Amino acid sequence: MSLRRDFIKFPLSLAVGGALPAAFAQAPPLTLLNVSYDPTRELYAEYNQAFARYWKAKTGQDVVVRQSHGGSGKQARSIIDGLEADVATLALGGDTDALVRHGGWVKEGWQKRLSNNASPYTSTIVLVVRRGNPKGIQDWDDLARPGISVITPNPKTSGGARWNYLAAWEYARRKGGDDAKAKDFVARLFSNVPVLDTGARGSTITFAQRGQGDVLIAWENEAFLLEKEFGARFDVVAPSVSILAEPAVTVVDKVVDKRGTRQLAEEYLKYLYSEEGQDIIGKNFYRPAISKQAQARYAKQFPKIPLFTIDQAFGGWAKADKEHFADGGSFDQVYARK
Figure (tube, rainbow, N blue to C red):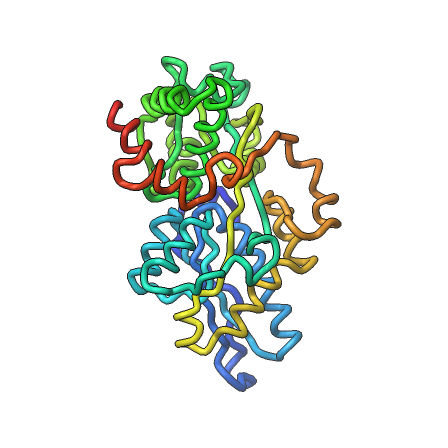
């Protein structure tokens, strides 16, 4: 799907595959629902078609994969509230852990069921500016300057926003030496944020289509999609340091056992680790986590940024969520200062 069309239409779902004509159909197609976060729309639009071809060749069965996209935290809440997702491909492990804690939708130990802690692709956080970089934005420091308008989504609802927030926090902590300096920096940065969209794609639309802001804090893949679609209008700035974003995938155990789709759902996720799956990942500006061939093929498109992990800098998602994004955490405190 064209990113330009997606910005305009902003669909809630994508359908891939379809039943054979009635004269030839032997059985209705199998169906899966993949509940994902905002910027994976283009990735899964292409991947779902590839998986449908693979499954048809392997089994002779047709499969339709439906998509639901939104802020990662909101998507997790939708599953908890009863949305029957066969698989969840959310922005961060913390949102998937919520599916374990609230209702047992996913079984404990889910990250050990697939390689690389169930992360078939990674990404990072970069900065997008207007063409020519008229405000001279080069690094995280510039986002806290007076007069700079920063676009980023709401960490309460968006997984991408949490990666953004923590990347900025750790940059400031390393530079300033402690959490107090980091907190002050992030407070000044968010004083420059005019609006908090609920998801990363919403913030991209605010920046690219509505013309708000001097700089967008964005997923790397989202930044490159913008550059690809609107190359004459935007530049990508690689910061001096950023976070290794590790989106994770899982079957939703309660749903697949109820619907009888476990085998299909497991195969769907495993195919992300195949050579074709990894190639599609790289083609859509995510970093392939498994295939050495795909990593080599797409290496030149990714800037070389020193990356730290959530475990290294924050002690894992459980600790980061409690300290920064739970009610009364650091985000609530700094945003109250606006």
